[in-house]
Image (cartoon, rainbow over all chains, first blue to last red; front, side, top):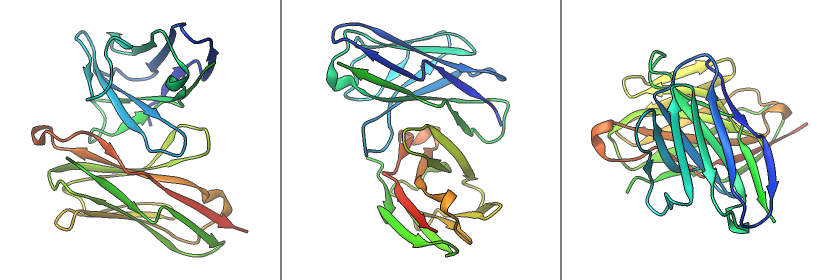
Length: 117
Length: 114
């Protein structure tokens, strides 16, 4: 199957700082990538859909100015958590669909655990 | 609003048992449904993907079925092993025209005891 990587795998930062998370499709081009957030013992929640070369589409309740998404190439999308606060501590996961693959299957990155002190 | 429900929320079984995990969804305009496993603190591993035109998919000891009319999918695990212990999530993939969003269930936490 296709491979999606995320970097970093975990990060600890001070409140008020910004953190950038990268999501890469390693062996295919992804015109669309998705960003999810998962709080402890809860399910994944879709935050936004990242489209290469255009603005991301954010889900209701997700602040676009706080969670900046850039999808500048067909293999890279970045999520920047600006002015992070402890309540932003969560597990962030990206996924990508291979448009040439079968049936719109999504491939997930390994996730990034963010802890804001 | 699309809702995806997984039952049971948690399940503990002895090794060797066959078991069934359930996923139900409210919007019948489904494009596909995907089953994942998630190990503690880790990302998702895709298990099976069923298209709306399919009734079931099989991979090894896993079998997933889809019944669009009743809005249900089941994941069947045969001869369970301790290594199967994880949280199992189903993901509803909507048709583009439906206006619904990709939605995950809350998961079934499975523990297989040796």
